[in-house]
Image (cartoon, rainbow, N blue to C red; front, side, top):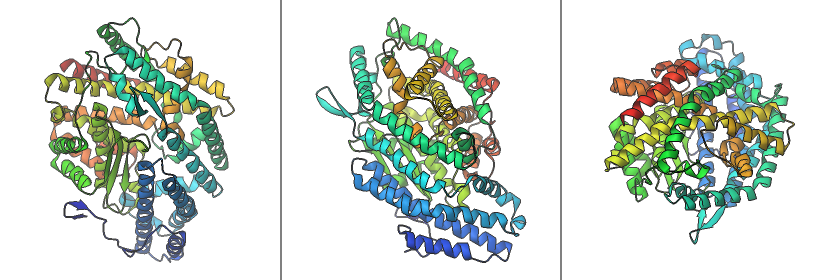
Length: 570
């Protein structure tokens, strides 16, 4: 809903506009009303589903703003306390009601009268949730949530002294692009040393999280946490074994090509071996500077999105006017970037840590893809269809990174800068794949070998770094190599949320291929997929997007072939 160019909350259907979900007594009253509501017809059942969804949206948006405030002010404990309090007193206490609501729908004799077209996938989703829910896991999930938030608190406070100034670890990233190799090495080692100072503390935090997660899986009747999470994430279209095959395919097809690119890099840099601090610097000694300030940063992104489709640009402009953006890095902010859906607004909030690099452009366009997904689902009345799995969420965002590739001249007037930005983006789509395999394979090993020691865990991570090594020399850096995972937020905060990035990356390249070949038709199919939310299976929605849901060795060869062709034409 728009007013004066800003985004306002949509009108509620079942609840008063002044109803707030920040007190458990008020939320519980409404949950009990829904729970006790009689269902005497198919229409009654549909009303209960829609009413519960609307209440979910109210709770979700309250949760969203508390999370946003916490991450925008990670150095202020009152925000994390407020978030944790809300999670413990409202979100967690509502979960048993969520289970009972799903059971109420599932057991209703009128369920069979619901339209298969509209409600079929909804029934599949709630059936899965019913089967794995255990009430004894609710307090464990509260503990897990509180512990995982400590990770952001720890990292947000880490700074180093460099060039006579205090720098956040994120601010130090730009020095890895400095043409001065000694400066790159010094900055890389300084950050690595700072992380090693926290290695024991972070390993202890992770072991505490691991213990809780293992118990959650055991309570739900699973042999291990990996299998539990595969089921909990509703991965109906593929198995853990399929993902292991994916790991193998990347090792066989992608790593050899990336080693070729690494050889080219080594030769152009004129060095004997590639070290970890040599992988970000431009081979011509060039650091791209796409914008000077946040205003310029956003306005140019609006122009780019408008060229893909005018409505996309208008929506980012509305987010700017509505103050739904917090983009620049500063001390005290949590690390990372995200798009947080605002269910009642039918919009989203974008958070990131921009420092003036090309990566910031990629991140904003990526998160804008998520935001367009949030807008597309604005009028969805079934909450489960708004809650899309990562294979779909990341397809939306990664595709937007590539769909906007043709229009990066908004940021880069210089033709050589533009070519570099495009080349970096295309190479980045596949450069990322080995790290995605490492993060997933590492977690698969952790949770299927739960009794390992910290030393064994570190050593296994080192072995993965070697297995998927793109040609980097890690000599005399064993400690740094073994601790690199400690900087991966997902392993701590959102376990097993990573392989979806790789699956989605393949899909995004396929959508970009369609766009290059079919133009507007590809955008139409992209929007078709956005509009579906999660109302169909993942594989069906990939087909709606005009692509295959496939990560076989044969398909990866096809994708890599397309990327090679595109790179050759730049």
